[in-house]
Image (cartoon, rainbow, N blue to C red; front, side, top):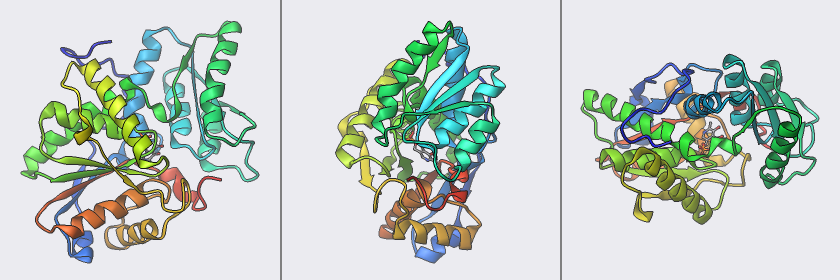
Length: 324
Ligand SMILES: Cc1ncc(COP(=O)(O)O)c(C=O)c1O
């Protein structure tokens, strides 16, 4: 599908535009630059955060292709699996989820939500995250053999079309910033599977905005993450018929700390400050670690405004131990 001269089909889930807010108390606490937050945690659908924007396009594509079941996967604490289950419900589709590992001893909030949304939850029996990537094609073939019309979505919704959602979100943000008369020097976002940062990068290049986009990688090593983001940004730009990003457009910082899903001291401190000064909630797996980077960048140069793109993660708040 080429999206150069028309909007992609969108199955409406979100309540956008999400607000852009200045967080002056947080600025004062770090003695740093102007700091703004784009509140995709308030996306208005199923606590789905950034996943809701991607799913609007992916579900529309699934319906367009005549699918009757969404098939995706991730970890037992994945926001993406829970968000996909919720989106399937309102699109009158079934949902089959493949999680790595085995059923957790303690039910995780994301899976509990997904089950309450009617999803069929299965496990790979293998604790490697890649076991989901290996298992999804097999599951999709099995469903097809059983007469179903599956629509497969990779982990994190990281496809070119999913990333296009954030190309469009950049237009939304740019219009809001123009109204506010604000020009951030840096936009910081949490990066996992890479689709969100890729869309923001492609959207930034497309709209010729001068800010740099920094992804705080919470799960993958920086080099691998950078390669994924660039590839997805280029594929998204191709769909949009807009200029491709270059390696210089993709900046990734290592925000893993002790590892994916394990809280980091710096992230915990950022979450504590955000809650204590602004009543702003950050989850320990994604957004707290990314906010720690945003605060560091804002503290380094007081003259250069920073925008932190809040991507949600609310269900993870009830799971402070994180991924196992
Ligand atoms: C709260 C939150 N923030 C950020 C991300 C990362 O987004 P992406 O996978 O598009 O890099 C995720 C992905 O699961 C998430 O749940």
